[in-house]
Amino acid sequence: MEATENQKKKVPAGVDGDTGGRIKQLFEHHGITTYEANQRMGYSRTSKLYKVLSGDVRPSYETLVDILSEFPDVSPDWLLMGKGEMQRPQVAKPAVGPTGDSTQVLTLTMGLDGEPNVELVPILAQAGYSLQHNEAVYLEELPKYRIPGFERGVIRAFEVAGDSMEPTIRHADVVLASWVENPRLLELGEVYVVVTDESVMLKRIKQRMTSGTKEVLLFSDNPHRKPYDMDVADIRQLWRVRGYVSRYVPSAPDLTIERLWDVIEALGFDRNEVRRHLDEDATSDATL
Image (cartoon, rainbow, N blue to C red):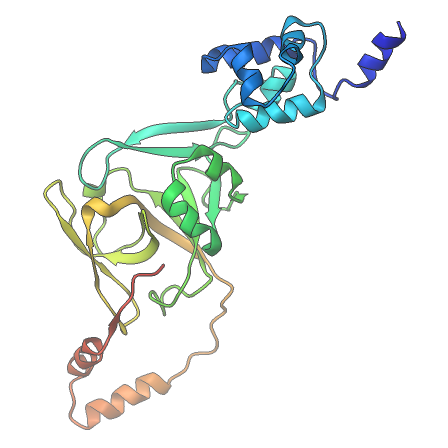
């Protein structure tokens, strides 16, 4: 009787009597035996999991942590209390890639209300996002928000690095962008987040992208940045910018620039010609 009482005290809070049965179901879902599960989690005693699965003992806190670490796709609520589905709340749907095929998959994380989260991709996380943009485990680790006006649809937030889109969008602003399921329906002249295996860029696209398009020209709003030529086959994701959050508050209107243009025109120079010369001195830039 004393041993039974001590065992009850060790049962983690929230673990019900059928947790062992769900662990067994998890192993069957992944097609592994109890012995293989023991090996994967580094248990030297093969009897450790057998007792849990048979219902002789309930899993300890350490065992549950090991299982959740080894199987990151499993929902903790389901494993501990039988609530919800076995898999973490996420959904994957096919989407037409930039080259016109259907090989790409968009992975999302879902909130408790059944709506997709708005994941934020900070500047420091963008190198990882380039390589893991559809990895469920990676997306689970990103900060998640609900933003007024963007409660519906597939929205992702990206922190901006660099000045390539100034003065429209500034460094450290956060753009809110919607998933472009079919690049053939791009709205010309709009700003897009372009994801490749090497970078995450914020650019303006002014040309159509069809199945026969090999290259696309990406434009910056900064007049000192030349257009950036990219192979369409290198594009992994496209997100259309729908809005942005900024900590920059504009100051009172400065009439200096307009007065300068008035002086230039008064001297007999054409404003567009001056702009063209400035653009020719621009440098290329491929950062977000």
